[in-house]
Amino acid sequence: MSALVLPADLPRDTLLLPAEKWQSIRGHLTGQQERQQRRQQEQEHELRRRAVSAHIRRDWPRDGQACACLTARPHLDV
Image (tube, rainbow, N blue to C red; front, side, top):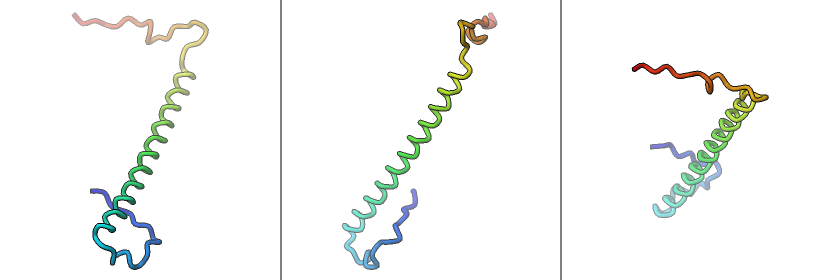
């Protein structure tokens, strides 16, 4: 179970709220944290995707040269 981080600016009487209201607040905060985590994962994924694209562009053969991995004959153990 993940930890719920509560904002420091919650009113002092928050603990006096009915259980239903507290659950609503808790659900809202949990949803915010999940959305923030999802955005962070999407940003990391995009950075990885860009790095791979840059690597491919940099290393892909130019001027009609064939890449060694594309021209090498695989060894078949029969």
